[in-house]
Image (cartoon, rainbow, N blue to C red; front, side, top):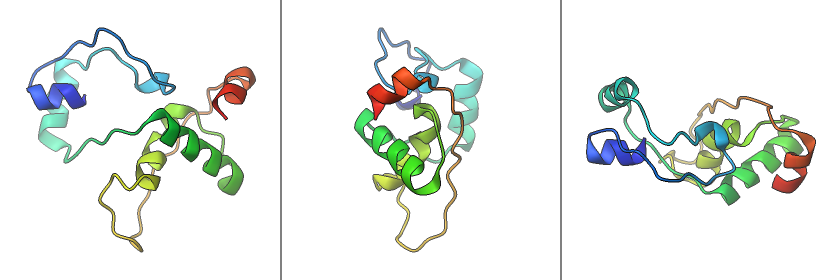
Length: 108
């Protein structure tokens, strides 16, 4: 999505490597791109390490099990990538617990 928004057209990636496989589509379709161009103010990127940190904090403090893609928005907030001022109330959608025990052990 980030590259397609920058290029103003669909961009196909030759490879995708991330722990957030739910966000790892090799391209964004024309219709979702058009919707994002019209309605989305910003797209931010987070690293796999930041996603892991978010997953750990969600598990330890909130007792929530989120898959990596589901923890990405929370990770972006933790990393300070969203331009949110301290003290501002925000909500992050944390979704999906689709990660098996072996994968979870590797991630954490």
